[in-house]
Length: 186
Image (cartoon, rainbow, N blue to C red; front, side):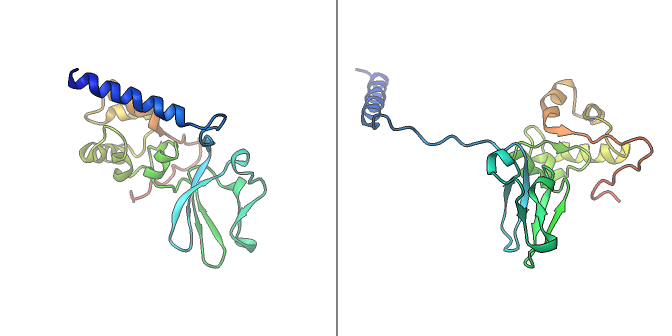
């Protein structure tokens, strides 16, 4: 037999042994229940982790983070927020404050008008120079009115926009309300 056939026979034999050794009636590991709403949790110890906000997943209806009057109810924390727990038990929520890399891990979209160059570089197909051009174009325009405004950025055409648009959202400005401040652009 040739080398490929021997390797193939070995793999088949290993799979058959593994199946024969599997205990009858024993289930595999429990499936992970997805969490549709997540936030960043920064604990007083300095530890940072993702916090699931779903009542159905966590059984967290009516639960709070922190203690006393400074506590935050889980149902009041918006997805994509950054939640800081202080040593005194107080809780501070920063809406939209979850860093871009954590937002992507959590399956959240990035706010195109708040994303930093570091956030943008976490996306597939965006390197440092394109991230800089996106931020520069945003500064020149004042803000992006829609994700399609990325077509104004040198190096982004229809194909690249189609690949990138699922990663972004733009918060519309209500008529008569001031334009939201974009962090780092004063």
